[in-house]
Length: 402
Ligand SMILES: *Cc1c(COP(=O)(O)O)cnc(C)c1O
Image (cartoon, rainbow, N blue to C red; front, side, top):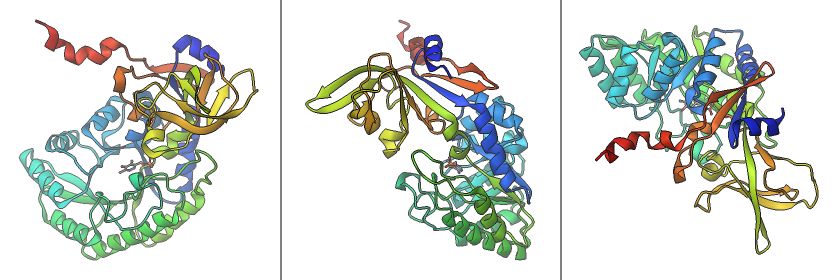
């Protein structure tokens, strides 16, 4: 890959996604579950670019959406309605109505109050809402507290006993049809025993429901598979699948999966240009043209991304922080990394930035969102333009008319 050529053509910073890699990750996961019926519902929030969604739809992926906006995106990208599911702890009435009218596969309910609201909306528009319930199995995913979701102390899901009551209510409702069960206990999970533990707990619930003649078709195991950012050992997919399959013995269900990070993280890079080097006393900073508004993970979770400097010289290596130009001390892409001395114009590649990178980016400091590029079959193409200042102020212009 000639990054300097790309930088000349598209300017910096930019995101670059390797679609061939996304495809191979997709099939790795799909293959691990080939012994059973399964459906991948890609978690749109990880990377919601329409071209990424369209590419995944072409592989027969479904989509896990956490807002009506994401459902809108999935539909625009050509997703099949019956392969879209809707999750999230705070869905509004408008969003639920939109999902119902679009006739998506099912809604993952996260509370009793949400179920009652959905029933009301379904009755208003005279439709049956297919539902699944997100169970909070109270297991510890052993990941960063901000991305842990499967403990009762987290806001997500419904505990087992309440879930059971909700299923019974839904079965007796004219406007609700229970079709699935769901859990998602966290993200960047490296120790899959916690997922297996959750799977056992939830499978037991499915069996109890079966005894009550509530026959669920989808067993949705969420996402959360960890990837390698530094030196982490990724979970073995065979073991992952075997543990899930073991918990499902005697059940005839389709396994739903909601991978986000696993499919796209390692397939993406963030490319940024060195602006300046500076020393504050003995502390060395490399100031680049990308910043926390483009890639928030380091600032938000102290996440680690591998950094690669593309430069001729490899002299004078020393430790430095790679920082952006935002007016926040928390604005950094990497800390305490050993890099040779850099000069203005050198390119820095931030690795494994395909998930929760662009999709978390913002206009903070009125910086334009960067452009996104796709690499496929040996060719690079642009899949989102760099924003302009006009784009940024377009929605405010009408207030300036007089
Ligand atoms: C975020 C999320 C996912 C995807 O998580 P990853 O860690 O990116 O795989 C899946 N399901 C739900 C409900 C989510 O909120």
